[in-house]
Length: 310
Image 1: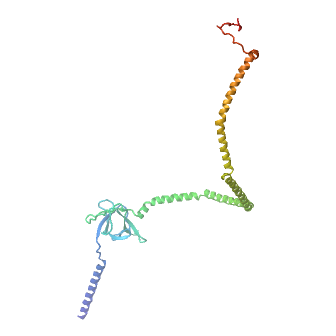
Image 2: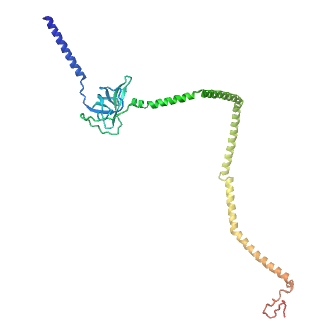
Image 3: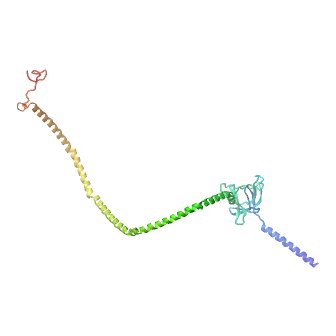
């Protein structure tokens, strides 16, 4: 009887401890966070994403994946249902991508917002609103893989052409010519060494010449200053030019009119003298007897057609 009593006590103790452990596990794993349901539909692959996977908003955990199945509204699409904390800023401009966790490759939902609409997305657990699911970086890489492979193939073909025997021979010839050119440059450099050695002397001569030019320029500057100084040569020339202009103006105003009058009078006298000389040439006797009375003209008494008196 005592053995049965001990066995029953041990069994009861085990049951009580088991119940306490279950209650403790339930208490530790309880989740009182209030969440809203949202859905995502995509025609892309969601490999690596599992139920209970994390949902993060810009890296901050805000929920988990509740269900992964097929979309009954869009044929062929995959439907993902997630629960997100009510405090998460889910707006109409929020979008989702499927990302991978480091080296494990486990997928999770990454939420982000482009900021185009600050209006919050109204939750409805009976008909959950949908968040756009955009292709992630891995999906974009897979889509571009064909293009990348084509580019790699083209690059490989061009590299093979570049490394052909003809191109290798051309490169070898170019390197040989480059070596010859370098040798020529070295020979020219050795030929220029005597000239380079004379450069310090030329530099000293050039310095002396420049000093002489500077001295001459200073002398010219000094001379120009003296010429332009008040009472200097240019000032005196200016005063002489002014006096000359005044004399010319006085001569033009006073002397020239008088010279004009003398010239007119001389011209009249010359005309009178010319008439007198002509009259003497026609009648030399007039110098002794005078001109006499004038010859009668036509219609006057004593007129004669031969020029004589009747």
